[in-house]
Image 1: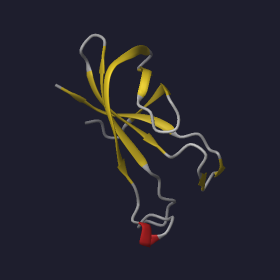
Image 2 (image 1 turned 90 degrees about the vertical axis):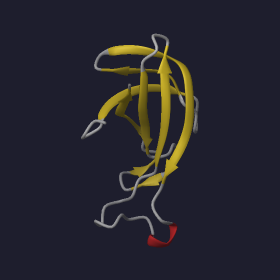
Image 3 (image 1 turned 135 degrees about the vertical axis):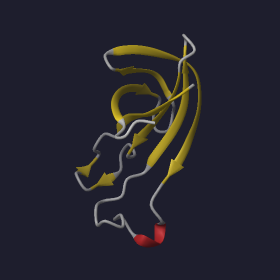
Image 4 (image 1 turned 180 degrees about the horizontal axis):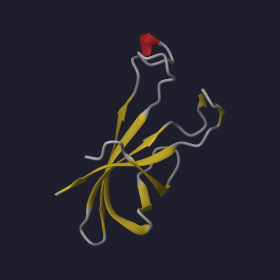
Length: 101
Protein backbone atom coordinates (compact mmCIF):
# COMPACT_ATOMS: atom_id res chain seq x y z
CA UNK A 1 0.00 0.00 0.00
CA UNK A 2 1.33 3.42 -0.94
CA UNK A 3 1.12 6.28 1.53
CA UNK A 4 0.30 8.66 0.00
CA UNK A 5 -1.27 7.13 -3.12
CA UNK A 6 0.53 7.91 -6.39
CA UNK A 7 -1.20 9.65 -9.32
CA UNK A 8 -1.86 7.70 -12.52
CA UNK A 9 -3.38 8.52 -15.89
CA UNK A 10 -6.23 6.19 -16.82
CA UNK A 11 -8.46 5.55 -19.82
CA UNK A 12 -11.84 4.20 -18.70
CA UNK A 13 -15.40 3.91 -19.92
CA UNK A 14 -17.63 6.55 -18.38
CA UNK A 15 -19.12 6.91 -15.87
CA UNK A 16 -18.09 3.94 -13.69
CA UNK A 17 -15.99 1.70 -15.90
CA UNK A 18 -12.68 0.20 -14.82
CA UNK A 19 -9.58 1.46 -16.61
CA UNK A 20 -8.81 -0.26 -19.93
CA UNK A 21 -5.26 1.03 -19.65
CA UNK A 22 -3.27 3.24 -17.32
CA UNK A 23 0.11 4.93 -17.08
CA UNK A 24 2.02 4.76 -13.81
CA UNK A 25 5.61 5.83 -13.27
CA UNK A 26 5.86 6.61 -17.00
CA UNK A 27 5.00 3.03 -18.02
CA UNK A 28 1.78 2.35 -19.89
CA UNK A 29 -0.07 -0.84 -18.95
CA UNK A 30 -3.01 -2.51 -20.69
CA UNK A 31 -5.60 -4.00 -18.32
CA UNK A 32 -6.34 -7.67 -18.88
CA UNK A 33 -8.81 -8.20 -16.01
CA UNK A 34 -10.65 -5.83 -13.72
CA UNK A 35 -13.11 -5.98 -10.87
CA UNK A 36 -15.01 -3.16 -9.21
CA UNK A 37 -15.98 -0.57 -8.48
CA UNK A 38 -16.22 -0.73 -4.72
CA UNK A 39 -17.45 2.69 -3.63
CA UNK A 40 -16.42 4.55 -0.49
CA UNK A 41 -18.54 7.63 0.01
CA UNK A 42 -19.23 10.07 2.85
CA UNK A 43 -22.18 9.39 5.14
CA UNK A 44 -25.27 10.91 3.53
CA UNK A 45 -26.47 12.47 6.80
CA UNK A 46 -23.24 14.42 7.34
CA UNK A 47 -23.68 16.51 4.22
CA UNK A 48 -21.09 17.29 1.59
CA UNK A 49 -18.17 17.90 3.98
CA UNK A 50 -15.80 15.50 5.71
CA UNK A 51 -15.20 15.40 9.46
CA UNK A 52 -12.24 17.80 9.01
CA UNK A 53 -14.41 20.36 7.22
CA UNK A 54 -13.01 19.58 3.78
CA UNK A 55 -15.26 18.70 0.86
CA UNK A 56 -15.88 14.96 0.91
CA UNK A 57 -15.00 12.95 -2.19
CA UNK A 58 -16.34 9.67 -3.44
CA UNK A 59 -13.73 6.99 -4.14
CA UNK A 60 -14.33 4.04 -6.46
CA UNK A 61 -11.75 1.25 -6.01
CA UNK A 62 -10.78 -1.26 -8.69
CA UNK A 63 -8.58 -4.37 -8.67
CA UNK A 64 -6.69 -4.61 -11.95
CA UNK A 65 -4.43 -7.16 -13.61
CA UNK A 66 -2.26 -6.24 -16.58
CA UNK A 67 -1.16 -8.38 -19.54
CA UNK A 68 2.07 -9.33 -17.74
CA UNK A 69 0.30 -10.55 -14.59
CA UNK A 70 0.93 -7.45 -12.45
CA UNK A 71 -1.91 -6.80 -10.01
CA UNK A 72 -2.86 -3.30 -8.85
CA UNK A 73 -5.27 -1.56 -6.52
CA UNK A 74 -6.36 1.79 -7.98
CA UNK A 75 -9.09 4.29 -7.24
CA UNK A 76 -10.89 7.14 -8.92
CA UNK A 77 -11.51 10.11 -6.65
CA UNK A 78 -14.59 12.11 -7.59
CA UNK A 79 -17.42 11.54 -10.03
CA UNK A 80 -17.78 12.62 -13.64
CA UNK A 81 -20.21 15.53 -13.95
CA UNK A 82 -20.43 16.09 -10.18
CA UNK A 83 -20.65 19.53 -8.63
CA UNK A 84 -17.70 19.78 -6.25
CA UNK A 85 -15.74 22.30 -4.25
CA UNK A 86 -13.68 23.19 -7.34
CA UNK A 87 -16.76 23.90 -9.41
CA UNK A 88 -18.93 21.88 -11.77
CA UNK A 89 -17.63 19.12 -14.00
CA UNK A 90 -14.19 18.88 -12.40
CA UNK A 91 -12.62 15.75 -13.85
CA UNK A 92 -12.01 12.96 -11.35
CA UNK A 93 -8.45 11.95 -10.61
CA UNK A 94 -6.99 8.43 -10.67
CA UNK A 95 -4.57 7.04 -8.07
CA UNK A 96 -2.45 3.95 -7.43
CA UNK A 97 -3.13 2.82 -3.87
CA UNK A 98 -1.17 -0.42 -3.80
CA UNK A 99 0.08 -3.63 -5.38
CA UNK A 100 -0.95 -7.24 -4.84
CA UNK A 101 1.73 -9.91 -4.47
